[in-house]
Length: 401
Image 1: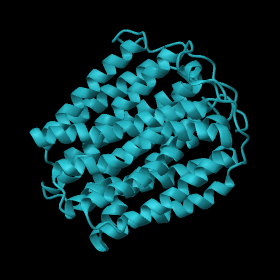
Image 2 (image 1 turned 180 degrees about the vertical axis):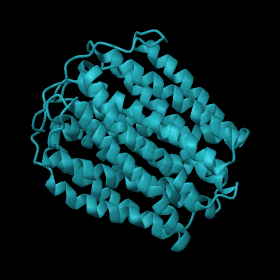
Image 3 (image 1 turned 90 degrees about the vertical axis):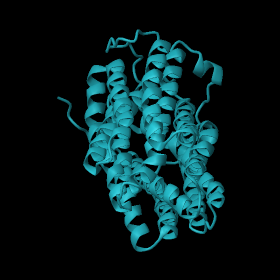
């Protein structure tokens, strides 16, 4: 049984930032597709609009992670919050579906700066021997934010309108800006060449981790982009749609810390990835077969549970395998794959919607998840069957970023 030690103050500030950013992300996940639809976008166009933020984020996440390695975590997080303020306020002025895209792109750029920088900060500020648990807490706080954001956004939409829901993103980023002053001033890190980071002894496994994130976030894009439209057509209200997303994120939050503690003790990376990807793929694919609010809530709960297992496991594996001084670049690549998946997923599954139906997009997402897991498992050098106990390098000692 592990004894929980008190977290450093700067690490607690990063945890608070995680909740703020993900509250914004969860709120916009509901508000963007519904706002685009209200302004006249068709279903396929909604997918493209939803993709604009993550695609921009995916393009800039790695450069932003390297930037934080060179110039410090706090500076990049301050820059991120300022960009988020501007993007959120501009979103509230959107009067045409296509006008949403550049403003949502700014929010994606804010996420590109935040995601790798905050994740690298967690890896560096974590108490020795508690890196997986710290990542579990970091991701749990983000999942709590994602659980709060959709129903809050749905309530604001129903009572005040779309523009107020979109503008709330700017307010959250104002709070985030002031929180960054609680972070330590950081010295520039020694940045390893990209080739050394990518093709070192652990490089093949790192690439498998990164590609798994691309697959995982691609398939989650199907419910994020099209579940609001699907549910509204079944007579479910915006607040209830928000509760569907909340059920996913509550499960996501609940599983993070126990999974982190489990990984700190056992290092069963293969087992965590296999269970998480199998459950999430089947749950997302099954969404196509029901119109019941309660069944949808149960499937979203299972999706969140599985997603929490996968992302906690992968982030921990990356942190263990990455040399000190390059954690920002490694987490930047993680964020590039994550946001890239969130951007490419709506476009791909939007094409499925245009050619067939929203239901078929959920089935396609489930199949992509299962095939993606098998492919990345083979890339790791293992078999499709899980050995459950892959060797890992010792985690680098926690130090001051």
